[in-house]
Every structure is written in structure tokens, then in C-alpha cells.
Length: 357
Length: 137
Image 1 (spheres, one colour):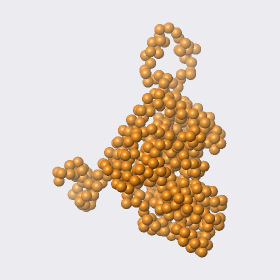
Image 2 (cartoon, each protein chain N blue to C red):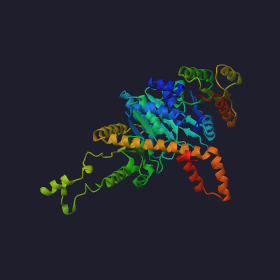
Image 3 (cartoon, rainbow over the protein chains, first blue to last red):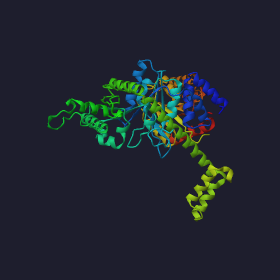
């Protein structure tokens, strides 16, 4: 696993804290250039340290503006910030127009902020294939915070959960009702909800619906509703209620996280201090509850699986192409002598046991 | 060359003029050519442009200048790029730039500058050719 001379030089400059080295290391990983895995192996030996916060929501919800404001607030506290902003690759040309920096212009000349735009390059989860690795690089480079902004989500782009410790879901009154968010799986991934552009009509309704949906999931939607016939169950004294408390399963203890639903107007900055505070509070909860370790572990699992998958795919392509097997196979399939399945089986047999042939 | 390698271009609009139509047209054309284009909006200072170019590790910076300040802005951005250790980046652009000015700037290490009426294909071909000859390791 020895690095090439040029990668070793890059690693040295990276460890010395050179910005151009971080920028080049990101390109190395993003393009999956020769030796990038060995480079990452060296870089990641410190383990995860930074606080990773992810932002997701529909296009135009104000994610970039909110990220820019929070980054400024972290800088005011003296924390260095890395930002990864993901925009879609055009499926037609393979090109991309990355415009998130437009909302972050004021941050561009601050030496304590590093912003990188990434194109999805065909990945469908709302992030690019290598966004998690780029965040790892920023982590290892020493940023106290790494903020990641996903592509505007439609209904299934939820990979942000595998990238961030804290997920902020940004919606706007125009996003539709909370049912849309429930369909999309946003209820399951949000640690903090933000209803942005809250000065527009429909904001109150959306906030209320999201709160109800959250409580439905928590099974406590009716907790504020009095019991029938005016009997308040919580006031019933005696042995019965004491037992009920004791038997309550551990998972429902109030040490759980109550998902806040916050209103903001990113343009004017209204409500953003509350978002900052909620993200801080979530961080504290993650650390105290032990959830941070669990999330990092879950992320590590996904990462290992991703690397294995990627290598397998590469090997399979290579094996299929070697010796012109695939090309021969195609002719045979067209003539009806073989099928895609029989050709694939041969490729796999070769992949698993190259000695056998 | 890695199969995932894309040409990354920063399309920048420095200075005070607010005419960004050309910049947007070229940004869209570059995207359609398969480039990854970072667009940063209006009123960029040379420092902002160079910081963005460094962080994004772009291959090319393309500036659109219609204000007449090209003889100041191109050399300034070039100097800052060199200073930041990004002297491998191609600095090119377009706008209302007289031919004799373009020739002077080319003598200072700045790439081809495109005037009004340029077809987007010319600009794309220029960037592709340059990249084929200069791809950084």
C-alpha cells in the first residue's frame, strides 16, 4: 500500500494544511484517480472528529442560503468550516452547472471556509458517489464543521443520512403538505425541520402538519388530548401509575430526541439563530446519548460496503472485458447460442476462481 | 487518464458590469459539452475568483468582461493564480476586447480571448484541445 512519490508529496502538503493540497486530494478522490484508495487509507487513520451536518430539501427551498448563514455563524465562533455542495449532473451531456456558490459569495474570501461544488455524476441518492469521502478529507484536514448540501430532493434521495450526523430538512410552504414529506421518507431522516420562506402563505399550516406527523411517528399524537369523560390519566395516583411508569420500555424514555420544527426567512436571517441552536443541541444529544457512536458505526458499515461494491464492479467489468469474452458472448447471444445469463455465469466463475480456467 | 476525469471550468463575471448573458450562455454550452461548470454570479473580485478556482481545483477559468477593464482584470487574476500555486490553470475569456489588447494579454500568459460573435463550439474546441495537451497529473 505504499504511495507513489507524487501522492506522498500530496499527502505531506495535505498534512501541512495546504489548501491547494486539499483541493487536489478532493479531485483525486472524486475522479477515482490511480492510488486514491491508498491515499484515503493514509488520510483516514485519525478517525472521524468533525461535526457533520447535512441539509436536504426540494430545489429552491433555500438550502444554500441557510448553509451560508450557518457557516458565517460558525466562523464568528472561531470554527473552521468545510462545505460540500452537490448539484446534479445532466444525464444527457454528462456535464453539470454547479451554482451553489452564488449564494455563498460572501464566504469565498474567508480563509477559514473551504467550499467545494460536486456534480452527482450519475449517482441517484442526492449526493455524488464520493461525497462521503470528500467529507472525510475535510474532516481529516481539520475543519471543526463540515456542512453538506444535497441535490434538491424529489422523493427518494436520502443518502444524506449516511453522510451526516445531523440532518436538517428544509421545506417551504410551496413544498405541499406534510403527506408529501412523509411519502418521501423525510420524516424518518430529519433531526431538525426548517420551514423556510415562512413569511409566505401556508407556512403555519405546514408547520402544524409536520408537528402532527412527527407525533404520529412517535406514537404520541394524542398525548395532549384529555381522556374520555374528563379523566386525566396522568393524574390517576396510586400503585397503578407507578407500575405503568416502571414498565415503560427503555426506548420511550425522554432521553430521546424531540425533532424541532423551526420557521425561518433565510433572506432576512429570521429564525436562523434558532436553527444554529437546534443543531448544537442535537450535537450535544448525539454525544450524551451515545447515538453519535452508533451513527458513526452505521456510516462505517456503509462505507466498507461501498468500497467492496465498487471494487467488485470494477473487477467484474475487467474480467468480462478480458480476452474479448464479452464481445464473443454478445455474438453468441444474438445468434441464440448463449443467453445473457450463461455469459454472465461464465464471467462470474472466472472472477471467483481465475485459476480454474 | 481516469475514466471519471471531467474538465472543470470556473465561469466568472468580474467587475461592476451587470451583463451576465454571455457568461450564462457559455456556462450552459460548456455544460452541454460535458464539462463541469462552476458559476459564481455577478460582481466577483479577482480574489474571490482565484479562491474559488483553487478550492474547486478547476482546469480552466473563463472570465466574461464587457466593462473595458480587461487590461486590469486579466493580469490581476493571472498574478493571483500564480501566487496561489495555480499556475497550471488556463485563464481565458471573452467580451468586448480589441484584438491588439488580446495580443498583449496573450503575451502575458493568458489564453485566447473570444470577441462578440464567437460560436460556442469554437470556445469548447479550444478548451478541449488545451486540456488534451495540458492535463495535469
